[in-house]
Every structure is written in C-alpha cells, then in structure tokens.
Length: 394
Image 1 (tube, rainbow, N blue to C red):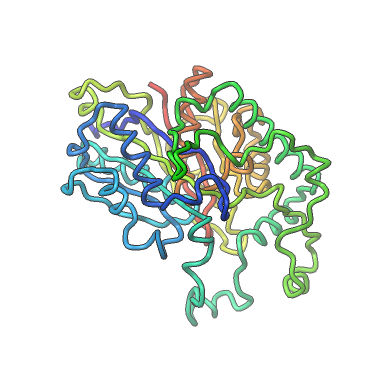
Image 2: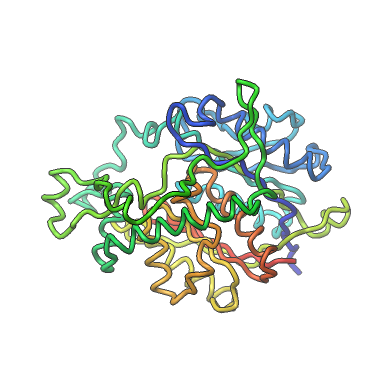
C-alpha cells in the first residue's frame, strides 16, 4: 500500500500590497518566508532537524529572490544546516506544485516529513524583472507561434471575449470577492492561518492589506482597461478591453507554508493530521489562452479521483483575473456559493510564488468550518499550464 501523505498544518502571512509603501515592502523576502517556516514548526512543536526537505515556490527568481531563496529562508529561520531546500518555478502555481511534489515524495517513500512553501515580494522584485532583456524562446518557438504570444492580461481578455463574459459580470464577481473576504476577515475566519509579521518599526502586520470592503460594481465600472495598447488593439480588433485593475488580482507581497508528512510520522510524533492529499493533476493548454489549463487539469483530477464535483464542498480557483474562475464555473456547472467562499486573489492578493500554499490554507480552514469532506484547488499558470489538487478532511 502507498504511504498516505497528510497535512498537519498550513500558515501564511497577511497579503501586503506589492508596491513601495506596502505593509510588507520593507521586509526582505527571505525573512518573510523564514517567519512562516519558523512559526510552522514552533506551533506544532516539531524539531526542524526532522524535516527531510523544504520545497519552495518563487516566480521572480532574481535580485533578492535569486540563489535558491528557499534555502536562504531555511537558514534565516534558524533551521539546522542539515535541512536541505529547493526553489521551483511553475509560475503562479509554484507552491501548489511544491505541495504536490512534497506529498508525492511522501507517498513514494522518499520523505517522512517535508515542508512545502512559497514566497513573492512583488514590491521588491517587480513582476517580470527576471525577464528584462530576455528572449523567451528561440527560433523554434517563434516558428511555431509566428504571431507571438501575449502576457497573461491579454490572455484574460481573449478568454472573456471568446466565452462571452461581459464587463459587468467580471466587475460583479470582483466586488463579491472583496465582500466575501471582508466578511471572512471580520468574523475571524482567517485567524487560524495568519502569522503576524513583525515590521522594522516594531509594529506587526496581521491583516490582509489587499481587501477593500467598500468595493462596488459602480466603482469598478469607472476603471480603465489595463492591457490595451495600440499594437495589441490592431492585432486583436475583436477585443473590447474589459480587464481592469479592479477585476484582476493586485500585485502582492506574501509567504505561506504547509507541514506535510506520512500518516505514520504524524502518529509517531503525536501530531493530528487535518487532511490528506487525495489526488493530483497537471495539464498544459494553448499558451495564447494560457489561463484555460484549469479546465483540462480539473477534468483529469476528477477522472483520476473518481470523486464527483457535487461531492466537493469547496473549490479554490485562483482569481488571477475574474474570467478564469467564471469560465471554470460555467464549464463545470459549479455551485457559485462553494467557489472561493472566503473571497479569492482579487481581494486576498496573488503573491505569485506563495499563492498555491495560501489557497491550501484557506481551503483547509473552510472545509473544517463547514464540515466538508473534499476540497478542490486549481491554479492557472503562465505559459499555459495548470495544477489541480484534491484534499480530503480527516
């Protein structure tokens, strides 16, 4: 029988606005990640020397986030030097992939105890700064896609146009994300997952800076499109340009981490598992519509697991842009009340490398709150890939 991979705990920082002056912008990303790593082992009474590996996600691996930042964070957290670490990049799904790799390592018998985590400081290492001056792909890629690929915002525009999702529906979804997140924050629903972050001025950040409780459809309707240029308008004359800062996830700073181990290790250490990993899937999709990979990834996950969508009590579909979860909801006929019930990245932020384990924290706490059995998480990723994960509450 394969070893069962269980989730003992998941923690995250609050989401800080990913720009100079944001509440977490004065904190080095390695220190940001170190804080959640240290708190994760501390609050579970775990000797960090027992951790077989730390697998971290980070997208913009340059500057302060270069040089295997997960290893830097492990050392910064005070873990023994014997604890190894690696940093991976599957774009927005980096730490969801880290959790999958961690759990799969446990199932295969390669690990007893492993931490999956992620970090992104978009204020200190801006999105795309690791690609400055780079040519993404050579002649072979350019010959396959002679018209060129596009950024994720334009991909979101193409999805909204192709599937006929109007601007008012996008804005309504975004406003509802903020309403749900604000309601969850006010009720203390995030308390079990949030780790306070000390700041250089002797303060502490323990609430999401990205939530805007007063968001309305009317306010969002006044925002201008973010991604239209004259060149793109000429290339895609069919677009009416409906993606704005209001129906997109904001640039964000944050870190998160999950403690994953075999059921046997948890029993031996006297730790109570909260959930187990049930199934995994990853899929590729058209890189021009790069955010649609959540559809084949979810289909593959449901086929592999044998679990029906109606049997799943909560769905976390990352809100990189509003068309993504709306498309997913339409394609699967999903219950909108179960979709991102505590708000999503439009309100809670999208600190790229951290988002996978951040979603896992929110999903796990929601399942426990509603007494659900299954939770599904899926994440679109740059370049046309996507991850999907199914967890089962214990």
